Amino acid sequence: MLKENRSTSIPKSTEKHVLYDKVVCGLCHKHYIRKKLRGKYFWQCHTYFYEGKDKCPNKKVPEEVLMKIYKKEHKTLQEIVVLGDGRLQVRLDHKTYNKKWSYRPERKKNGTKTSN
Image (cartoon, rainbow, N blue to C red; front, side):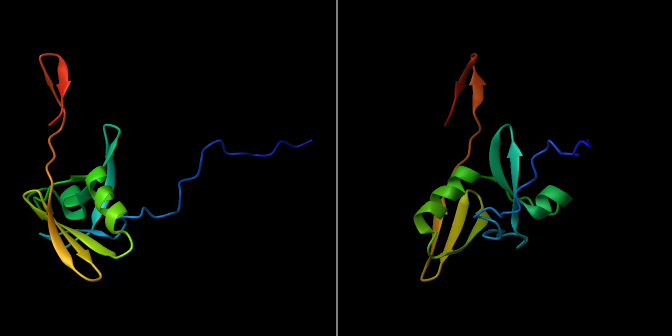
């Protein structure tokens, strides 16, 4: 009897993330890409990631910030433009508005974690 050759690895999902092609850099106009860093997901400018901050200095955005917008506006969301300086422009079918956000990573202070 022949043994079947079975792969034990799980294939990558072919489904696209709900934010795929929805997050755009307001500086270089490229789409943001999803990356995992220290167990958390972030969205970062394609140009910044592949060519460096000299080509595009726009910051990465925590996925939780973008998902809050998506959950509220998913029916009419066209795109989220990362303008820089902690500002996002949310473009819907019927209106556009700006939203501020801030990201401060957790830092150890006297041996304890703090979050701002």
